[in-house]
Length: 444
Picture 1 (cartoon, rainbow, N blue to C red):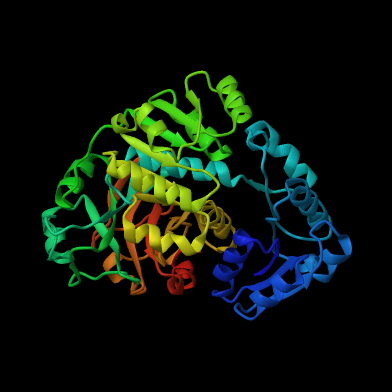
Picture 2 (cartoon, helix red, strand yellow):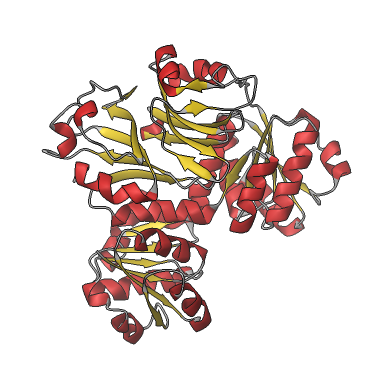
């Protein structure tokens, strides 16, 4: 597949690295020649120095033969215009990054398709969904819902006192058929485990499970499931506003931001949210606003260091659930080590969303995890695909990938060796990047 990416920012760069590992023909278009030169030395791709909204530059990038054109520059209008031009010049499918949630309304989609923009991506909305999922599953480092929650992906840090500590996956399977360990992060290494692999203290273990089995899974991992009612959000960014808007009907939500004008705007838009104007780094202010009574603390300022430090502070003040937006990729591993809770990176989230359009299989969801090399993929099974021809145990599935569960209609269940996958099923797979191309052939 030939893919042209306009924009060598962190989203475009991360996406280019993901795609280049699978032998796609990648062309990266950006106006910053030095940035392109640096990336070309790291990744196998072609670079073109130019502008996304220039017809000549798009032609130079080979847009006429592009199977997929992705515009992820920082400028919304440029991205939309670039997609319109690219489609007119021959690109088969186009995708634009936007900053206006209004464009995502279902009624507007046909208008953009008519113009030549096939898909729109608003990273802030995707990040807000991740935060909401994290808040609703306290105790888990990572959370992701497949098909509206019919299957769940949860990542837990295993402590010494966890009942499953020092247990093999074979032993774990005899305990419950309602959840399955699909990956383990041990230090800097990601393991797609087999039955003989052991779970040991300090591992982050990723499970696929059903909603009815949640309490049992929490018990086995040594975690306590607690209800969340009071939530404090630090920062009045678009992510914060979208998160607060979605949570305010079910929870008591409080936003703290230092910008008085922004606070007034948020207060006018979100009637059910309490908005405080002040510096959230001030411990006295946090105490005054009742941080000790909060069940969850979400830090989504524009500063990664501030988000990490305030989450640590919230933990010390007794807040059980913390979520930090960390856009500085170099800080993610640090955040994981200090145990601040869940980490959100909207660039990774955006790249995951876009990545599925490069697959031959019909992908309904991809979750790229910031704390591990693996990806969780939800694939829709096509007629006569290889996975429908034999039982799971006979598939000769790649060792660097693992099938976790299946969603059939509105029912999700954990896969066993004698499971028969059917046309129309949604199959949840955990895989290392090296396996993505291999598993594609089983489903296309």
